[in-house]
Image 1 (cartoon, rainbow, N blue to C red):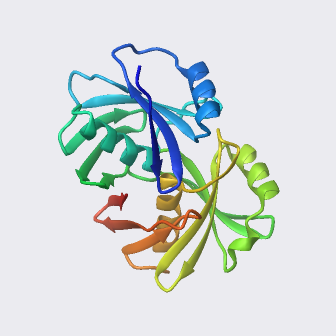
Image 2: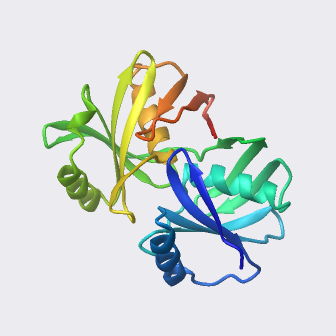
Length: 233
């Protein structure tokens, strides 16, 4: 079994493909600890789509969707000739479409579902949305307000990832605490999409902007007629 390590905007993964569908949670814990990455992706053959994935956080828990993971696995599948540059693959969140152009990958994200309208806690206004996995979003003027104790409390109360977002010159800066990792990660695709949607639905940003996670890498998110496109290296 050959393992490949990927870094997608600071979100790190180990990826491999196999014909055997099994529970790889113990292996995920072992490999993620060894490689010091956020998650593990297993690529499996599929009769209808280009492939199916199993996604694991570094604590061995599973996740339905991961935006940066989707871009990483698409590049992996194309590089290993498991799929052409335009592909469809199956996740627990549904079918994901990706297009690979050299090192740039564009992913069509799943349709968002509002789980809870805005509410206040810890002096902040929150919004809970599912963008493949559940995310809490709060928009702040100062990202130094990002607090791991608040994040941990909100994560367990709502069983969701937690995002602090700041709008600056029609761009978005996002910090994310991810469940399963139980810490801040350098980037989170579904978290950036959730933050984008919150700001867009509040008419604070246009429908096509640059988004920057704490890793500092530049990504693009656009929204048109219900379709969300997430693009980056």
